Length: 165
Image (cartoon, rainbow, N blue to C red; front, top):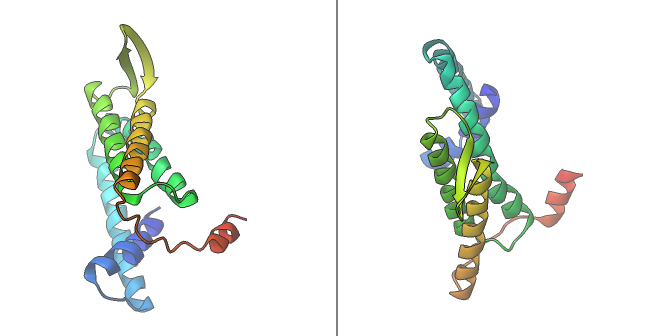
């Protein structure tokens, strides 16, 4: 995981933020340094934090990974959603899911949802995902009605299909 993280960081973030093209040798050196840092950070996390923190992070991780679905899947496989709408929907879902888990003191991810006088025990990621989808779809419609620029899509459909099959 640290190798994957370091390669993603080096190729997709560092080069873009540094605004310079790295040679393969520079990219490799940077990835090795970042990989080492990630490994030591993980070791410090495992040794210094209480065991309950690992469980709490697992609960949050499940909620957070669910919120990526609309942006990745709907953003990659449909051209209807606007990128800014997906980003704002993602923020809404992440914030809501995290807030729900926080309200339970990170002891559970099953949130008591109060609706029309009834209480429904529900995995916090589900209502957060629903909010994420509603915000993404609603803002996409709003952006379409106001003729807000869609942005450029440089996706090659043939390349996408070839990668899948």
